[in-house]
Image 1 (cartoon, rainbow, N blue to C red):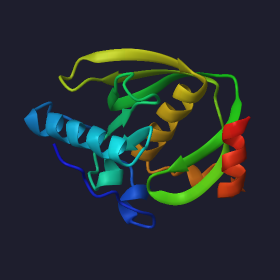
Image 2: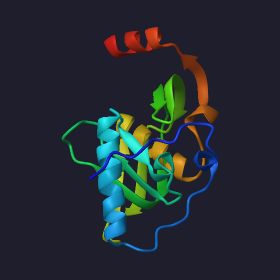
Image 3: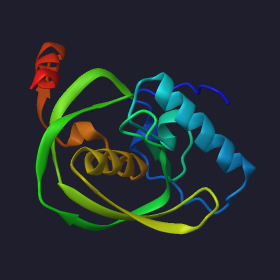
Image 4: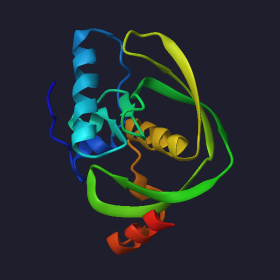
Length: 161
């Protein structure tokens, strides 16, 4: 496995809609494995393929180390419910954080690395992480949804609450 370079804003690929995955092969498995390693190395909770320069609908999410990565290929949001406000950051925007309003609950349909369909329902922080990564696949950046930017000092206080 390899640590991939993370694409930083303002690279154009970050604002482009990604192509659907049609080939579920060893190349895709390698991409998923490398994306997971890259996300862990960068201390992230999610990573989308355009963030490593690949314009495909592929993302990985793991909000708690060791809980097992959720691999999303060609994800689509089926249901949204409620509302939550929370702080988000992004590996493509180092040291930038902001409050973002997102749904509290989400239901997503996606494919796994073998092409099989599955559905996942999530609430709270996991819902936030899934939606953040799915946005990336549509070329939507969290900065377009920030209601208020947060300084690193404020971020440290958030963690204490």
